[in-house]
Image 1 (cartoon, rainbow, N blue to C red):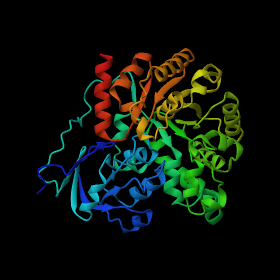
Image 2 (image 1 turned 90 degrees about the vertical axis):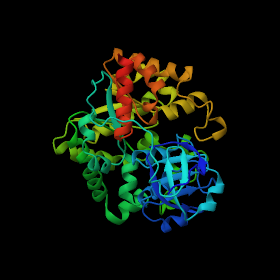
Image 3 (image 1 turned 60 degrees about the horizontal axis):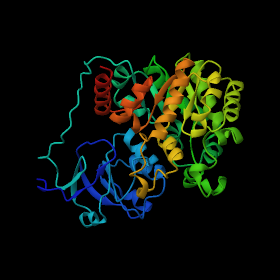
Image 4 (image 1 turned 135 degrees about the vertical axis):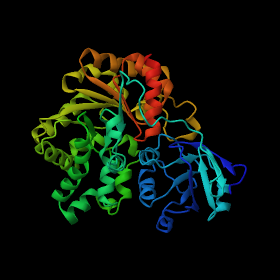
Length: 422
């Protein structure tokens, strides 16, 4: 049986699945080794960081059933990571929950119950036949972990390609917490190239539609958290605004070249549906330098795109149009930089909104310039599932939405889009 009333009510940031498991309170990253498959993990604020991608990756690979947090925001990269793996994440859970450590608990939407949840029903509506009319706006998926597509091959039948493949998520899986340079030192560069190509290949094989791949966006903070990371990385005071993304690929193309080589292998296999784009572009000159490097390394039979996540790019989009075939909006960073709001600061979350006029105006001008130049536009991440924002973007003429790779999200977004377009 389950407690009649929830012991706590939080704020769901991910899939609203019904999950039952043993509550395991994590007071240190050292406790991760004690996690059993299916555990419901509770993370107090003292354990979480400003960016929890490494912590949440370790938790996901430990087989957790759900993650409960004292405080975390939906834009945290760790939350985005577990969303793709269909692991529920609930924030705003009081520290008093530690009193139930070791008990069987059930997560249902925003609510936490004591017991096995056998008498609970999660209220959610979802079609599984996908028989409603197809929309004019394409529905794509975000896919950082190709095994999701292997586990649910039907996803490729109901969506129109991959709009956002984060290579840093895929690389985390391959590197197994070793810094990339340490991995290559131990196992060789070709091993890493082959592993990358092997992981990406089933995805490009599953789709005739484009698969848009973003080169890695490891920040210094992420890399220093890896084993031997401190041997290769210097500290940065603000890693999110630091040496990451396109800047790092240009200045130190060690890992960029490995990703290029992996994609070249796929092109040699005959795949023609690959698109590539870099993170954190700021200047037209750096984009040209990045693209030229890729082309000189042999990438000539793919499409090149641009991620719009800085106001600088949105305000100068006309200077990029000759060099790109598609655009992917990174709404979390675009909102953060436009509104000058730290996306992880809980005290400012009430003002952190992609639908603020200033952000919508940047969406508008990029979509308008793209349409004039026959450039496809797409928004990725959890913002593509926000009905109000989707309504705005469809009105502006966006071409596609890239959403979480689960049938519940896809069906809800499809229904919403069809309703908007009608």
